[in-house]
Length: 352
Image (cartoon, rainbow, N blue to C red; front, side):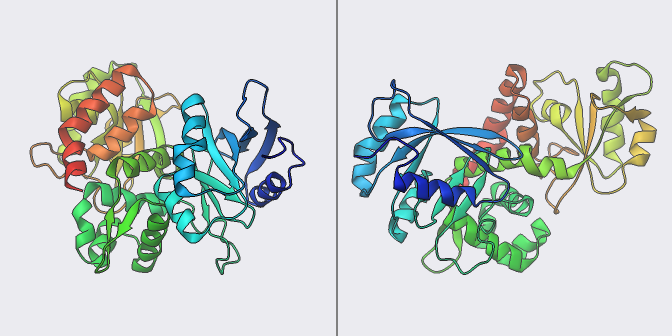
């Protein structure tokens, strides 16, 4: 069917397309003997500034949509669940590209169509786009993430005018239009017959938001990490933080925000989402800089960082809190994250 070697002309062309992407390194190893399927060419490693991801490299010279799912791809996916898979093929029609995007199947073809959707890189290039820098055209940026956040918090905002989305996200209208179109091409949104969009899969969009928040947006929002000048238990300071938030303009997130929202967690730290200068809060809480501190300050973005439930005041939205909890990959926090999701985010998913 093909030669499982770097000399395979199709594989070579596709890897060349991949190496043209900025800030990405590519390494390919031939398939070991334990991978008996003749469609597996080898292991492709894609490395960026943020992460490194291994893919089983599946060569399909040509295929139909049915062939892809009913035979090769599904079989290889089931047998090698520990790896992501990427399709290497000669040419993808527009309909094939659309199909693969909706199924979130990553691919490279010899003409330059590329879709990567992992912790290492988020790239979609449609060959033939009239752009000098189309490698970055469909990347999910921090601005994209701010728009996604609003869509997840207010799914029905897509039924309103784009001006409402502009007001909520503080992102210029033209940038919003471009990003919505990109999210459509990436399979996160669907188009309505009479114009506009709707969320194709809320859970998948939420996963992309949280991954992007952790790897990209959070770092841009980070203002500083602090601890107490005098050694104190965090529980002793909690009343002061809550009282200060009640007459200041900051929002409580992280573990303390989760504890307030769920009445479940015994918090050991807090995220403070602040709209402006944070020095006065630092002074009032007697904090000093520390990379391992219990208090983290993040800059607010847009106008919708606060939780709009009137019963829970002065805390960040559950989307922000949930992303912070799963960031730690901790059983204690994961359990709280699940409770937070069930109590507050599930209704949004159901109504999307």
